[in-house]
Length: 246
Ligand code: URA
Image (tube, rainbow, N blue to C red; front, side):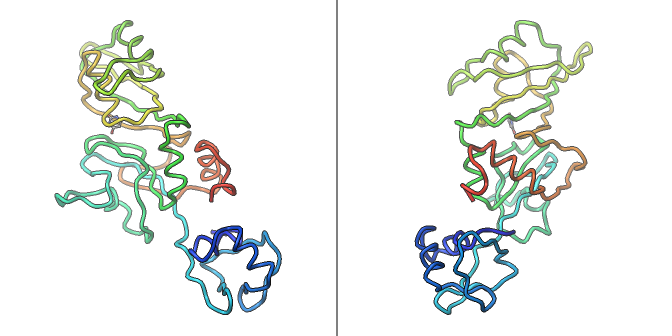
């Protein structure tokens, strides 16, 4: 992926962004053997050789971004001490050292993003940006109007009252209902605990959307790389434009 020359140099750990700019202006930086003195040129560090003071820099690993449709039965960590299957087992072709952005419980399925872009990950998980996550929960009874209102307005959990949520009953029959709930907090097992607080056990849980992305076109257990437009959109939701943050 292309990035500004000064950014590539600073990400390689050689200098701050500003010092890297000075190195370029001083004519100390070469790209494919030619000195580059202008700021702002963009290059793909995987495609070109960049030298500073005649020495090739080791490019930081290119960023990678994937959207996975996690099935039940996989843990959302990069490695599991108990030897259980992890979400990374589902992305055998991903060469980068990627991590999930947040977690889904072992028994929750659905949309999980994975990346090696720590800045984006931190932004998307930061409570300040209130990134929206939508889940569909299956429960064994219909929800009363009071229960819906409680979920919408906030329920008391051990770690505090939940923030306002959107709640929509998708379908209900005697003895079962499917409820869509959109929250922006990311507490541990939050959706299951919210339903429990209003007296319902969640029998099955799926995340259907995260930060405006959906599972469309991605079957259970499959994944796809994000597009450039999607990555840009995520940066905006995470509080900054890509150029400022990346
Ligand atoms: N809420 C839950 O209860 N579980 C998840 O995996 C995600 C949100």
